[in-house]
Image 1 (tube, rainbow, N blue to C red):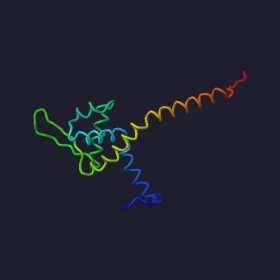
Image 2 (tube, rainbow, N blue to C red; image 1 turned 90 degrees about the vertical axis):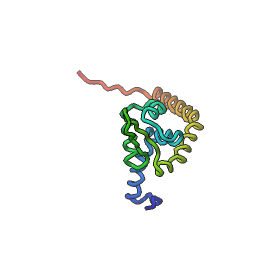
Image 3 (cartoon, one colour; image 1 turned 30 degrees about the horizontal axis):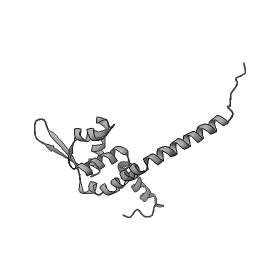
Length: 138
């Protein structure tokens, strides 16, 4: 199925479904880390992804596995060893995610500066407008 015609409802729904998964920050981070480092254990991923909670990493890995992007391998050892790696489908995301990471690194300073300018302008506008006060008769 081609998603070129975005005016079709089913195409928009399909695109939305896929982008909801691969567009969230934790999925991008997991796919990026597995793409850069190959097979990793849960705690290795957790250490590499700053700020992710154990619960969120677990949910993200399950969803990526469900979507066929990540494979989970359990080794019958004591304690059990579990490793995660990208599937062939997951590997196809490496180039787009690397491009996104590079773009983010190259443009982060400009984005922070734009936010500061916007916030200063909004604060100045808010300060210049007269305050609206509601009076309750009594």
